[in-house]
Amino acid sequence: MPDHNQTAPGELEVVRRFINTWSIPNDTREESDELPELARTPQLWRKEFPHQARSRTDALDKLRRLRADLRGACHEQGANEEALNEWFSSAALSVKTRSMSGVTKLIIESSETSFVGYIVAVVANAIASGEWARLKTCPDCQWNFYDHTRNGSKRWCGMTKGGPHGRACGTIAKVAAYRAREAIKAGVP
Image (cartoon, rainbow, N blue to C red; front, side, top):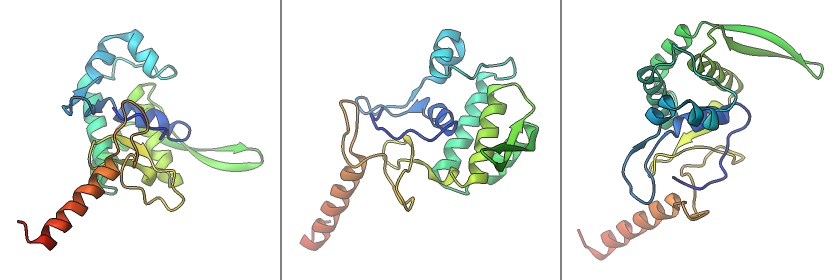
């Protein structure tokens, strides 16, 4: 998995980590799904998500469907609206106000006491605040990352390797595009 410092702000980081339980490790380049082992082993779950316990309603197939729908929504912003709306309906979301430092904010909460309800509420709050559009999926390695750039235009998880497990997806894509353009100029099919 990429070794990037692309953590998301606040609770959105839990969503990013949850989405990244499915990955394509750089050393094998084969799909890897950590979710079954996390769901099977409470100690591993607590280590990965220390403040979000699973409930009986958080079955593995439900967690996988949520992860797939969130991954799809991050990969193509606006694409999975219907799926997200179904999750919002099923999570029994409610809107409340909360005053923080003299500023009143709207907070979306789930009446469910499940991990799924928590994740869905965090996503709803991120959409409402505009942060959701910054949670993206790298088109190369499929790693989910948070775009910290000023204008929110980042396309890849990274341009440099960034560590022993990192991958310079942006550089790899740009070099491939350059080589393709050069091949066309040279008349090579």
